[in-house]
Amino acid sequence: MRAVTWQGKRTISVEEVPDPQLQEPGDAIIRITSTAICGSDLHLYEVLGPYMSAGDVLGHESMGIVEEVGADVTAVRPGDRVVVPFTISCGWCWMCTRGLQSQCETTQVTEQGSGASLFGFSKLYGQIPGGQAEYLRVPHADYGLITVGRDLPDDRYLFLSDILPTAWQGVQYADVPDGGTLAVLGLGPVGQLAARIGRHLGARVLAIDPVAERRAMAARHGVEVFDQGDDGIAAIRDATDGRGPDAVVDAVGMEAHGSPVASAAHQLVGHLPDAVGQKVMETAGVDRLAALHTSLDLVRRGGTVSLSGVYGGAASPMPLLTMFDKQIQLRMGQCNVRHWTDDLLPLVEDPRDPLGVTDLVTHRLPLAEAAPAYSLFQKKHDGCIKVVLDPAQS
Ligand SMILES: NC(=O)c1ccc[n+]([C@@H]2O[C@H](COP(=O)([O-])OP(=O)(O)OC[C@H]3O[C@@H](n4cnc5c(N)ncnc54)[C@H](O)[C@@H]3O)[C@@H](O)[C@H]2O)c1
Ligand SMILES: [Zn+2]
Ligand SMILES: [Zn+2]
Image (cartoon, rainbow, N blue to C red; front, side):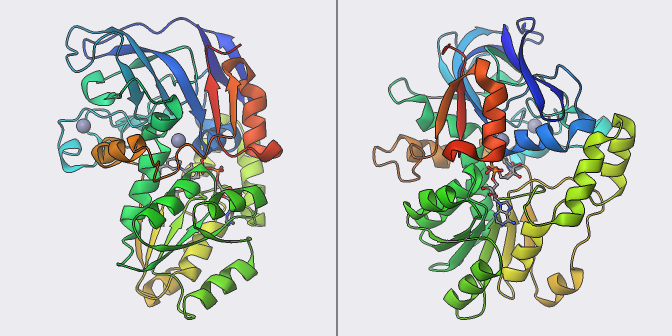
């Protein structure tokens, strides 16, 4: 089959690789109909290279049709239409039964000290082949597949795999009081959905992003938008009686614009041999912290900062004096995708599309065009906000 493979920093290619096979009785094989590129893929593309191997198959936002199931699989049959959550979880362990599927004790990557295995996500998360491919092997398929209806287009359902529950969890963790204010930093796909979810749940939402068309898209959904920089921060403070918003969702993560020192560290790590690069990641602060530090500065005293954006440095400096003095609550983590499915499925099927999932994809391209698609998404060229790759399109 054809698959999108990582070959080196900012180098990916579509290659012919062996078809995935059933390996365990709980596995299923899916034929992929849509597979998106995520901001998390951009971290692998840019800074997490030391944890990647040439030939790794990327992708963790996929859906399609069940082709084949192992002997123990009972919840899905060949022909079913399914979405694949990016966190691989068993559904029955201590963590899964407490709604912490991204910490699943059955799939944890203990040799790396990491939580649940993830599709297409480097040695840190189990090096499981991803779904930017024609076919995907899904372990723990009884719990690891969300069966969906036949009538609505893929774009309605696809984001149940990652960014919709990620944004939902980010807003739940932000714990905005009734009628309160939520600031969202970053209006990439995750920030877009977090902002709309905030509105849907009744908050006043103010968001910052340096990219004009991302601000324009959010404004279509009732979000008050601001450019990056001090003006945006001052404007949000002014709009919240000088106190700052009740909660902030950081939907940017470790590659924020406006962090010159850490940018140099990123360049360095990306060019070191793997073993040395991993050591730097594990011992030094290589995150670009502009968005996180803005979140902590912006939130009102006693408010909550919720990190949806991914951070990866082991010793990134944090303003603990401010955090303690302002009495800030901080929540974060990889999304517990399966925990939120029952809340979200009715919303994506609602004919009114209350979370606006059909107003997000700007580019639907053949799988074969993955390399230019990654570059387009990273550089934000051509108005690119969300890319979906289609293995059937040529
Ligand atoms: N927690 C999870 O389970 C989970 C799941 C999916 C994605 N993520 C993470 O969420 C983050 C966002 O993902 P995405 O797909 O939306 O990616 P993205 O890269 O498209 O979005 C980031 C946005 O932040 C903006 N930005 C950059 N610096 C900024 C700054 N200093 N202030 C304000 N805005 C700034 C960019 O212009 C961009 O629009 C990534 O870190 C990704 O890894 C986490
Ligand atoms: Zn993702
Ligand atoms: Zn589990």
